[in-house]
Image (tube, rainbow, N blue to C red; front, side, top):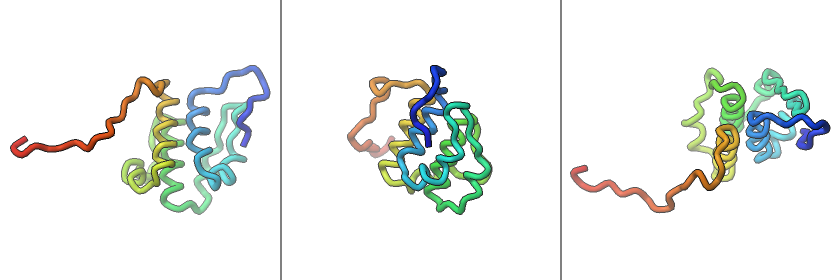
Length: 121
């Protein structure tokens, strides 16, 4: 997978976001990388999805597809699948979404405390 651009053309937000997610997993990089062309701002999704991925990888690719196309891929449950991802991969999805939505880290604040539901609420 090419991460460095060869021309002066700026990489799209979608491409940067997808690459942020893909680069979080070596197997995704190895298999999907040859089908991603940052220079032409092009991703050939069909051969990527034809590979026999496990459920975690399908979820990550589903998020990449949604980031790229602004729509979900049929038969991939993004939220159900994301719950089962390990933390570094969940973080990669969040980073990809932040890039896609042009959010800076300072714009997002995650609470570290558990929420408590009071009786009678």
